[in-house]
Image (cartoon, rainbow, N blue to C red):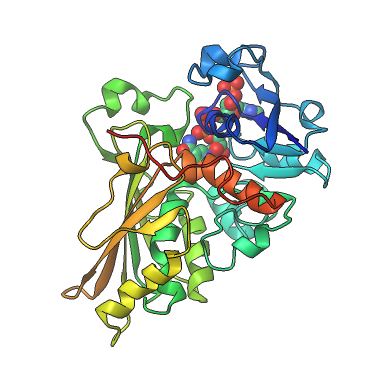
Amino acid sequence: MTLRVAVSGASGYAGGEVLRLLASHPEVEIGSITAHSNAGQKLGGLQPHLHALADRVLEPTEVEVLRGHDVVFLALPHGASADIAAELSDDTLVIDAGADHRLESTPMWEKFYGSPHAGTWPYGLPELPGRREKLVGAQRIAVPGCYPTGSLLGLAPGFDAGVLEADDVVIVAASGTSGAGKSLKPHLLGSEAMGSMSPYGVGGMHRHTPEIIQGLSWAAGEEISLSFTPTLAPMPRGILTTATAKFKPGVSVPEIRAAWENAYQDEQFVHLLPEGQWPSTKSVLGSNHVVMQLAVDESSGRVVVVVAVDNLTKGTAGGAIQSMNIALGFPEETGLTAQGVAP
Ligand SMILES: NC(=O)c1ccc[n+]([C@@H]2O[C@H](COP(=O)([O-])OP(=O)(O)OC[C@H]3O[C@@H](n4cnc5c(N)ncnc54)[C@H](OP(=O)(O)O)[C@@H]3O)[C@@H](O)[C@H]2O)c1
């Protein structure tokens, strides 16, 4: 039976990518598509790459419009999804690309988002230890943030295998400008962002910090400490994450490498590259693939992992659809590809 799927935030980057992937998904038909200020517009004028849906008209993002679908994707600014989700029936699978339902800690939510905590849903990163099982049959799914996707996949194997120390994790990540969404912001103008890199949220201020701490602490079985610095890179999409942590005394280099090889050897969408080959964002663009490489820096006692992910595919929409597939019992790769676009 074909499932009817609604996509809210369809005029934005995340909603647009959900639609691009759903358009080739064999088990679904696209029902209502909604927007906010662009409600009433034809999708083709806003998302010209979505040719098959060009004549579809965006409806307002209201519960009455989203009701009656088998699956509802919410690709809205954080804070906008919780009220809508609360009004949708338990029979509807609701998949939230926003942050509202990712964190377990109410104090952390309040500290970083400054609003009441809406609760916690199963976390849509199946390659993180212990998460895939929680997605099977789920009716509510919180899609991970884009920075957490690369950061968690990069370091979780080392914590899960017990080869990393929890007390000194350092992550620096460079993101393409689509990570900030499609609304107009002066620092994202071409004349500001082109040919320049700049940091933001420095000093533990970025909202993805508690989410990365949460996921790595799940893998470590203890609270980790993190310094996270995001930077803006002059490219439309993709994130390159450099994540480092100290390795435990007495652990050998082969043991460290084996932790990552074992974690991802059976995964379709996450891979440790052959030794000597380093990831680049270009190789994963438009794909649900995450690639990484690691080095053991024996002089500093640290493992250094570099991860490439497409923030809009595996970092949002691809991860959302992969999680939908698991929840509904479809093969996990349905409607997704691990092949990128080159050159
Ligand atoms: N961009 C990424 O790489 C990425 C990665 C992971 C997660 N996410 C999350 O996905 C969500 C959407 O991000 P985005 O990058 O797609 O942002 P975006 O490009 O700015 O799109 C936002 C969408 O939400 C709609 N919207 C704006 N204000 C609204 C409101 N008050 N009520 C209902 N709808 C509203 C917009 O409609 P109009 O255009 O009609 O105003 C648009 O469709 C965010 O929670 C973001 O954190 C994004």
